[in-house]
Image (cartoon, rainbow, N blue to C red):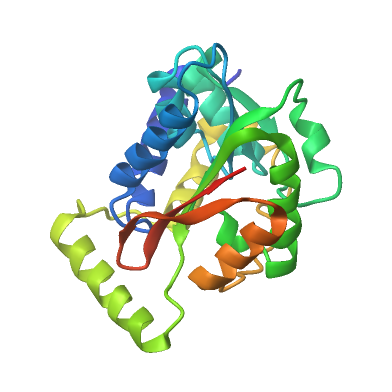
Length: 251
């Protein structure tokens, strides 16, 4: 028996809730990213948007809701998260399984035209600096002139002391504004593994799970340098709380 929509919805909602622990003002960041995509795609009849490291598609769905004429592709390496998102969001999104930066990963997305916007939220820091350099270049090649890459992630200042202060500000902000959640990343996955209703989806996941994290540790200047080298003409921070930033790069 397959997994029903109600089960998928329950686990997607639990995913969104536990993710609040790891992203300062996560929902506001999503709004900022969506604002940027909407601004850049104004007047385009059928924008094509990629969400990299989408998980079950929470950010992608927000963009699709704001831009109903857009084709939004949610890209992730985990088949369980993609299956839960597909059951929960239905045909609102197109889901694609791919390991970002792996050889041939772009071919798996089945793109038929230039991309208008690429977004990512707390995912690209897992890539090594060299992999990210290559990915930025690949994305610059996918985007139409005037298209945008938006990366919302943990990106610290260049100064170690200022980075410490930014982290303290972010921590205080989270304490004041975050809704408490007893669930974290590990407990979500443990709970999913113990849920017999998810067994059909977990059987497709295999033993390896997520790709190995390489954690690039790049500061703001490091990201901006890689983006400029990749061919993005206009790059910079458009939103920040503590060390949490939204970077925009326009092709």
